[in-house]
Amino acid sequence: MTDTAVRRQLAKGWGRKLIGAGLGLMLAACQTVVPRGPSGPVVQTPPPVARPTTTPRVDTGIPQDTARQRIALLVPLTGPNAGVGQSIANATQLAILDLRNEAIRITTYDTNLGAAAAAQKALADGNRLILGPLLSDDARAVAPIARRAGVPVVTFSNDSGVAGNGTFVLGYAPAQSIARVVDYAASKGIRDFAGLVPNGLYGDRASTALLRAVEDSGGQVVSLQTYDRQPGSLTAAITRLGRASPYQAVLIADSGATGATAVPIIRRSGGPTAQVLGTDLWNTEASVAAAPALQGAWFASVSDGLYRQYATKYRTRFGKAPYRLSSLGYDAVLLTVRIMRDWPVGTPFPTDRLSDRGGFAGLDGAFRFGPDGVAQRALEVQEIRAGTTVTVSPAPTGFAK
Image 1 (cartoon, rainbow, N blue to C red):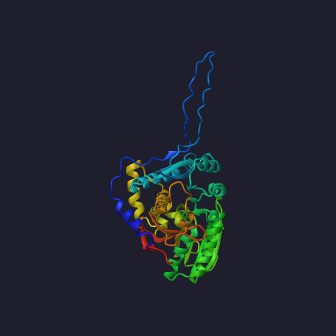
Image 2: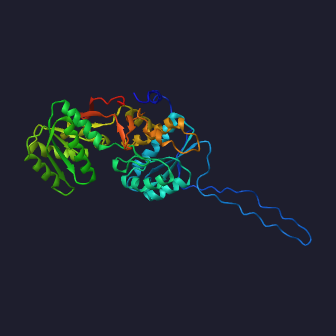
Image 3: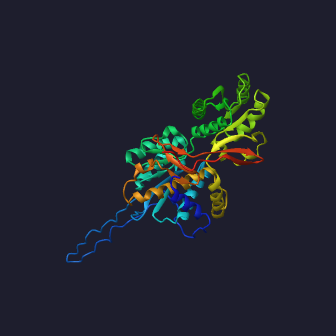
């Protein structure tokens, strides 16, 4: 196991009551006026001469804090993604409370108002580590700004293309999920695979991941079809799929909702018994297990064991269910606390510690950052069965060196 001490601490901590006073998240827009001393005295002499008063100096930015580590959280707090952004912010607060750590100060900046502007404000305020942003485009905007300042970025995006040069991708990389589920299918004797992937960057990377994973497993991809979001495009892709050689399994590299739409057409169009495979996207959809068409499907994702306990605590504190992606915020705090042992207050963040080959532990299981800066995760395979998901291949507990 990679970071057993943290995992034990995490596992034991679920039974504790939340402490009533903890570190709150601080918003980015505060200003503090710091007077540099009172006005000078007025001296009366004949003839009376008044000394000029001293004008108070104004310092912009958040109050200085020399006792805690300064960390910026960049997430959307307004706009269409505000829900997931606020859920991530809540998760970071919950992690600090659970760990009872008073040495971290997290300030939240709204990327919906401009990711580049949020990053520049975070750096001007003296933050030495950036957690976030959530969206790929925002991560691309923030990365060069942070790089010039020598501040590392741990983004929640799943776009491996933004990784490197001080940017680390903590999000769930689809290529790893595809490789894991293909490997499991191959272990069950499946050799002939087909794929349905959407047009666009995600689909391109899913296609590459499928081809590579099947080749590594000793199998073959007999057909790989793409589609767009136009009416009839998915049906046409499945029809083309049915004209290819028979296939034993088909990967649907899209949401669970798309999978539920596709499977009945697949059953009528050349894949009546094909094993359905999904990606980690399915683990973010609460309704996926209830879809009748997806019963028996396999997909690989991070484990939900500790997440379910976290979700219960989250509901108790915030009065609603968390977004599944919010665990990334919680784990980012765990990661930071682990590295704080080698990070004196007021010094640059020790970026090299993120590359610890032993890895780290979190709600989502074991993970470590590879040489490319993308989080490598220990994934499990789940099967959709009787309206729920069942683990059919547990996640490894650590990594081979």
